[in-house]
Image (cartoon, rainbow, N blue to C red; front, side, top):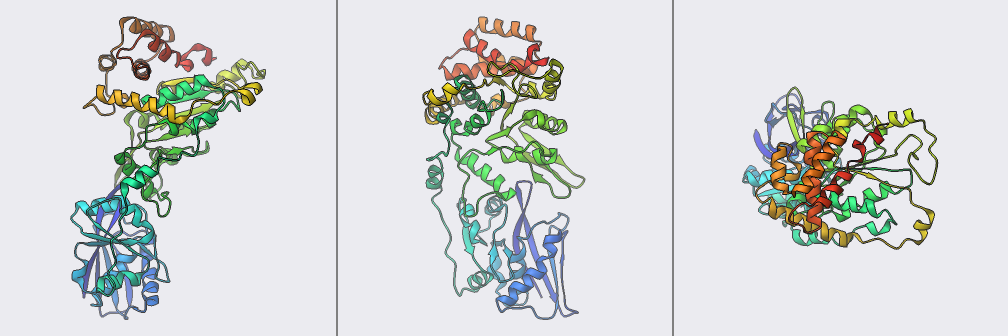
Length: 514
């Protein structure tokens, strides 16, 4: 006796079809799963048998061989439980096998027959729709996430019995639907924090606005308690709202990683990830032993990756960021597979200027020796700093300013200027994808796109010579100056715009190098 059901799995953030084949024969009782299953897949036999017994279906004493095709791709996770259980019932003629055509299933089974949620539902539904499937039976907790995709029926099941009764026609399940546009718009209404909460620091807020308008990387240097972390956490509130395509891609990543809240349908706010400085290089950019997982830089895709206390990170951890910051993706290669994860992020870092944190402060005296300051700053490599566009000093805030300074400008108002600048960039760079983040562009290409006045270019060339900047820094300063001009509504980059952009290369100066 033979039957086949359909399921799916995820490799990286891309889903692929898995055929669940079950062959039942009269032999010594056994339940074997083949097709390169990992431990959690092999254990499905115990969960399936217990769930079937709870549903009063049971399994006759026969030999059951379950094959997960394609057999040359390693299968991971517990989401194959439900299709395995259904396929065994079809093989035993307890179900009409024709009901399984154009139907896919995913879900983990509990011993009591409940169907538990699975990871990676969104990319799976997209793949199934493109493959011509008409419906998918999945855990009720994942229904809202899956219903974002139109053109395929989403049938939520709470228990194994619900699934069987639907397939038998005894109690058909109604498709689950949501208003995607309403969910998307609702998510932008109530930001939890606001840049107006930060007293003072007008210069840093200006830098944050420039960074948001151009998607530039940024590092803040200042003493403890000056508001660096508070400012960074409010950066997503002035970034342009996610587009529907960006929201779908971000939701896909979070779904695969298993961090999408239960019952959620879309990620509607830009991600903000702030890993601790003890993080490993594999956890930051992705990888791992055996199972390859997305790293923090991918989880921050379309958002902000914030590295607080930058010098405290291990040197090898920081250096692995160099390639993703240029290519906007992470490629992880193993002996039997290669996975690519997106990594289009804004890198925002913060650090103290010295070990005690008060070098250059006008409020508190620094107790560090010059050589200690130089050694501390040298923990951040030149190539990494070269990829950070804005170097911003964050001075300590006086007590009087904390209690008496007026409220700052709201995130809503700043975001309006940021969105207007981005719209200008979209018009100017029409047909060119991610111009500001294209590592393959030559300096001449950037010059042609930026359209700077002769005096502005003269300021840049003199700064290049005086600060001994790299060709990469040359292009990045041009891009920052173009962003500043867009915020000011100027068609050309003027001398003032270029001077401000050059001024954001603080850490390239000998003053900071000891």
